[in-house]
Image (cartoon, rainbow over all chains, first blue to last red):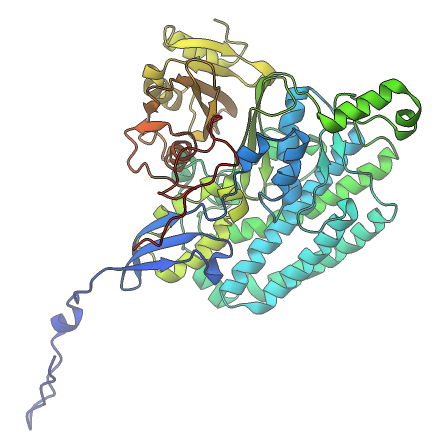
Length: 415
Length: 162
């Protein structure tokens, strides 16, 4: 618009308001984000239709990390599927092991010894903590807050050290076995774990101090990526996203497995269902996980030493001394190693509360040593599509925190 | 047919005595096998009946029983938050006509999971708004989770898409 010069002796003319407020015609543009973009920390592609800076529509394209999890499981023995489950959600590998093994044990009808149940509960909670630390830390990093990310990663490092003591691996920690765990605790584990808990609590306090009421952080999270309770249920969203929308669904309480019915812990629930609530839910869940780990340690010490594996000969190898000296055990060992356990025919579904929500495994056996079907119900895959609804009409910048707190993990989403 | 003490199965048997082909509750999972033609009606009742109130379609998958007729089986897992109960609904799909009704009108969560079943098993969903491949790429030949798809099979190279 050409500016009209004020005529001499008259008041300067006010600019005609309608000209400024007139909606300038812009064409919608299509923007490809990913599949390899720093903010997608995984491989996912967003095809975004933009009107200026607002998201008009969004197509989420997954599958870049598909490696045939189910097909591989269907071509090995029941045991050989366990390492593949580590690689589903590599942030919380023990939880993925656990989901699969509990489903297989349901078919086999095996109840592992009590000590093993406590170890599994504790391992699972350490894993959950590692996952939440990664999620909250990475979210801070992507919102340009470097310091809390480093606090989070330092705490995760402590968790990974503990996982390494449990099973020898830091990331793809393959800890759970059918009918038991890999091995019992190292003698110095309880002391090191208590020490780590104190340090993690201090780091979480620092994390909280530096970011939770930071103005920039709060402004970017509050009222972004909102989803209602009803929409969560229709989209079958579970985990922290559902709880942040005000539904206190946690399978550790609703359908207790392992030792969760004997433990004292709370389920944090949000109100609004925005990213800030999700952040608060995750932070509180870490505190609750620390409480659970402490209780598990106390109960393990009270329980004293004992077996950590089932005695069921279908899944357990015989003692080495007997294998070397007796014919029957030698045959049993040979069959266990070359064929693997035979699982009774039938179908079973078992769901656990993983860090992202309901992680279910639907397993079908025809009575042989090879599964007919191992279906993983991946929370990452199922929590992702409502993101389109969350972001319609939002700003492009809101995509980053929303995607962070959905915590889509490529390995689990694409399988 | 028996309801095995499951309120969901009991109500289903009352409502649809003719459409339910079999029930079982092995390993504690209440399961009903239903006729393919009545799936949408049955699912609608599971969602809307106050005594059932299955707000969540948690999981959709298929199993390939190669050599049996009908060959495929669709498996749906439902969960009710209000009543804290679960049910599994199954329906057989023949090889010659691998098609079943889409549940997207009832639960939007069916969208991606049905796309995945189409992608990996080649079962079509009637009424699905956007039935594209999801985990694999458009040029992929065949449906790899079918039991007659060899694991070692190579796919042709594809050029850049422009």
